[in-house]
Image (cartoon, rainbow, N blue to C red; front, side, top):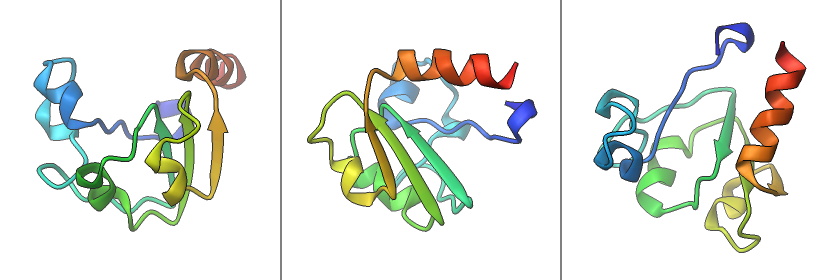
Length: 94
């Protein structure tokens, strides 16, 4: 993440599953953020999460569900598998 100046955020289900610490949770019961660019990887677009990132300047969303709610809040959306996209991003920033 340092290579691109990014900060990691997460959804409540990831926090509840103890995959990531609560301090990274974005949303109604987490942090409110307003970055210039928000990249939503695998985010469904639950209202609780949206309220934590809605002030982002630009939103790029990647979700395999073409009907995911997050696409209603994104400037650019890709219907794709998040893991495939992450592999491509990782290759590009090495």
